[in-house]
Image 1 (cartoon, rainbow, N blue to C red):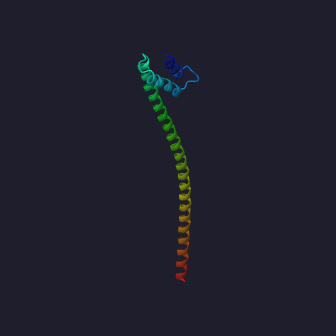
Image 2: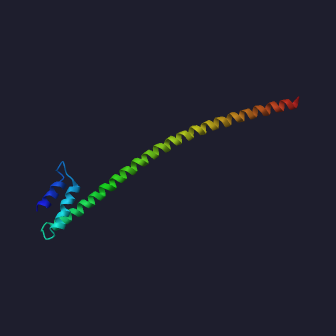
Image 3: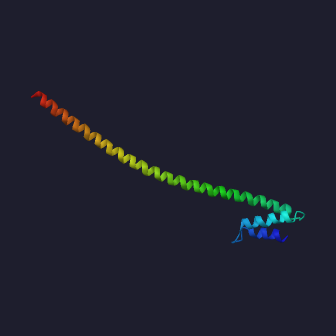
Length: 115
């Protein structure tokens, strides 16, 4: 009974120092060391519940980390996109200037040919 109560106290939501790992340990000890106890079935239920909670908490941590990584990647892509847009503008300007020079060269060539 003491192990079950220790597990319950460790897992209780109102406990500011709750510790699910400690609760799991208490429930598992109860199940393995006292298999004839009337608290074994409730302890097994709590073990299953806490393991599922830990699994969900880990999945949540992983999703949060993945989201953080995706946000950072998005920031990098936005910076790269801005850089590429700026480079495109520079190239467009250079192309336009080159065309103007070509037109000017062609005008001078025609003028020279007329003479």
